[in-house]
Image (cartoon, rainbow, N blue to C red; front, side, top):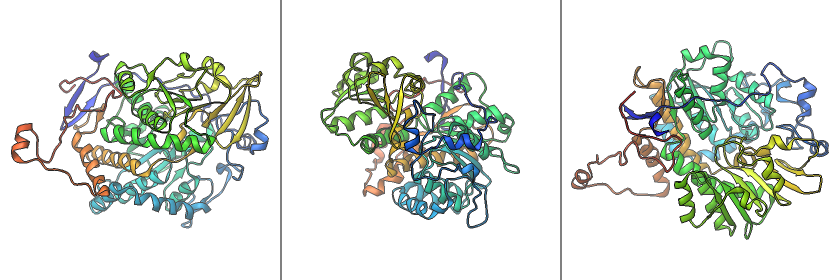
Amino acid sequence: MLGNKKKYIVNGNSGIRAQQIQFADQKQEFNKRPTKIGRRSLSRSISQSSTDSYSSAASYTDSSDDETSPRDKQQKNSKGSSDFCVKNIKQAEFGRREIEIAEQEMPALMALRKRAQGEKPLAGAKIVGCTHITAQTAVLMETLGALGAQCRWAACNIYSTLNEVAAALAESGFPVFAWKGESEDDFWWCIDRCVNVEGWQPNMILDDGGDLTHWIYKKYPNMFKKIKGIVEESVTGVHRLYQLSKAGKLCVPAMNVNDSVTKQKFDNLYCCRESILDGLKRTTDMMFGGKQVVVCGYGEVGKGCCAALKAMGSIVYVTEIDPICALQACMDGFRLVKLNEVIRQVDIVITCTGNKNVVTREHLDRMKNSCIVCNMGHSNTEIDVASLRTPELTWERVRSQVDHVIWPDGKRIVLLAEGRLLNLSCSTVPTFVLSITATTQALALIELYNAPEGRYKQDVYLLPKKMDEYVASLHLPTFDAHLTELTDEQAKYLGLNKNGPFKPNYYRCLAPTPPLKTGKPG
């Protein structure tokens, strides 16, 4: 494995080769749009859907929501534009308040907006984005707009969109196509509406999960002739890019934000350490003390989840494939097990591996009554939810994003968000931590867009360490923190520049997405 991968430096930036990509089969083609009646049946009320034996991927919305699909509505914002598709444009005022609150907790992004607004480093940039649409993302989008970019946006998750925020963005003139509770067909339709528009073609991609990049490759490959680069922030999407690069199919440079230190050490760890408890508490009202929990994966997300649950008094087990992460789990006081060894006794199963079929139908069959099953990874592939959609099992909707799946003998499990990302589907995430990731994304877009021709090849690159340190430094004033400065003698002794970078480019978090080794450029 190591022999097939390189790490190299180009103008101070590091990059890596990658492997061939395999995308999940799309069961529904875009042109197979369901009828109006079919789409409405996907968002029936709780009382109707609770009697079904099993549900579709986006079967439910809150009972108070209008059942009419946003695709069937004719909406305009106050400026007369209808180039958007959201749940209800009338919610814009509430969404604007949420965005203003988020701005207070995103100091670096606001500082970047203020410092670079006059220079307009993204003037002429046409960015198409596919991320979670939350108040924090809205601050990022409006920052990109302030820096000169035009943006079109869709959601990367059918459950994570905040409808009022999407409405506020649409009211501000951003073409946004997203709402909470999309069907699978709606999901791809929204992405297509962002990309396929007359008189507008993207030249930058900001992706979270790789679905947008995949859709353009699949439907509009000629667009890559004008696209300058891709910025990707998730484990799933980064793996896809590495595989494309390995196969020689990556047409443009791509920036791997996921493995930047500011993403791994802060967003993945601290964000999940707080949001795992929020998501579980909101959906189940359970007490954590004394509960037995198994966390599948001890990367940064798994570390955050385990630390939070341990602090609440839970008995935490860990499963791992990587011996280094496994040793960390042991030395942090967690018992390392195979899932089969504890599946009958645990009260909660949490996946956070970025893999597929971590929890299979065999595991689900063996779980104890009322076991809670949820996913903290980006993709919905970790739990084999499809195996539960069989006639002998009954699905019962308890509340929004909470299903009881009932076996013929009466045993039931509690499935959260139908196996999709728990924190953004069922609760919220800490704004301050997302400021770190969003600022990193913005800087990566600026770097790729303004890079002279030839600086970046058709490959996947890691952010230079200087950029990571700059993002971190922008957040320190919030804590009234004061950095110690090296003396000239100390800097000479360490062989460092007094102003950084203070870590070499190969410094990463433990167990980065690709195995790395040093080497010369391509």
